Length: 432
Image (cartoon, rainbow, N blue to C red; front, side, top):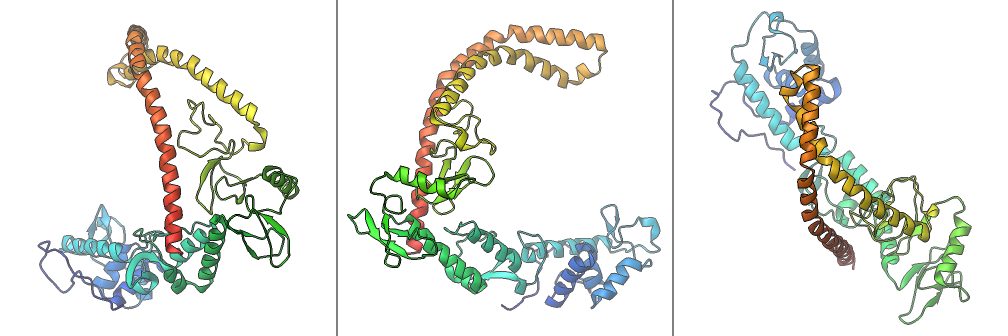
């Protein structure tokens, strides 16, 4: 990609002189090295390289560190070159305002065209990512780490550029790293098999065969190790057990000290190591509650939601400690407490608001202690008088609030289901 000198977009009225706001590739490289390797700020680097004409970063660094005879360049409160007060300088640059204006313009242009959007460091064009022959404001190292983390987390459906959110194609991953491309394709294959109800990995250890089920068959045989596999749970065939019983037996053998579940959508076994109880499957992006297994909504853990898991989001609350009966009792208790505590809150909210509003006023803070005490008592009495109004407001808003919560709950379920279906459709369209 050919490099073009930075051009001035607008005329700010500054008279042209020997130093313009255009910098070439060599100057840009020196400015970036002086800023990132020597630790000077961008203003100092531009002044030393572009305005003083140093062609080596060592000479520029010596000038910025030790030269005490340079002219005073007014920038903010101190000199923009050495960050010292005006009294330390023997001469004052009469063109300070022009120089600062041009440096600021150069800084804006560099930040707009050469700064990585992730690490916020400046790079040359060759060190920035180019996708489909277009430059993107993310450096090669950050882009590599972004791809690697996305692949390790199995978030490979519709990967987007961190800079502009355009989809990253398979060829972009291949051009950037052969190693990551191999892992990327492997993850896609694993996801396709996991989401395909007619395919499954052989559950035998060290057997990487893919088993294909016939349309009406519930059991298939692995061509390599000859074991039979159940189509529904994708485990060894279990003619004398249900899928739930067989899966529980398999999990009990594998996870004596592990906290695991099966994704409700794609049946992948998920292990929870830490974090909250809001889970997202890395394969199919399905979101569910680790406690009860229900689809996740944004109000699932709300204290007022008797259909969810009120206040059970923290990660230290484990699923194995909550049986179905215990969860139902907990939901009932939270609902009853909500009914009991809500009227109490309505009764005290008016006095509390009146007192809080009074304390915030300057009129209250400027008074003596005994006058402040009287004012607090007066505010409390006014709050008591406003309690009937608070009760009326609460009663009027109660029914619409309940209706709104119910509507929101069902709309949220529909929205999540649509998002899941859209994600799966996009994946299979991109990977037919």
